[in-house]
Length: 98
Image (cartoon, one colour):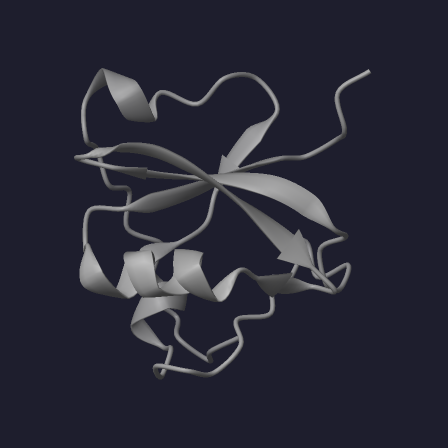
């Protein structure tokens, strides 16, 4: 994580980014700090460590795309999509559906 004291920027893309209950949005600042080809470890916002394996949805102007977090790393294809689209957001369920 970075040592920024800047607040997270809320990005609005209209109704398709409305978050259903239980979804969280990862900050665009995370994506800005990446270098191409490096793994993106997804860490719990509360500082509880790396996020467990789980599905994620990348939302762009072109639609919604399904990827995964595996061994704490976001799928490289999802990272590339985030790097190429500054309006893209990642949504992840806080808890598995029952």
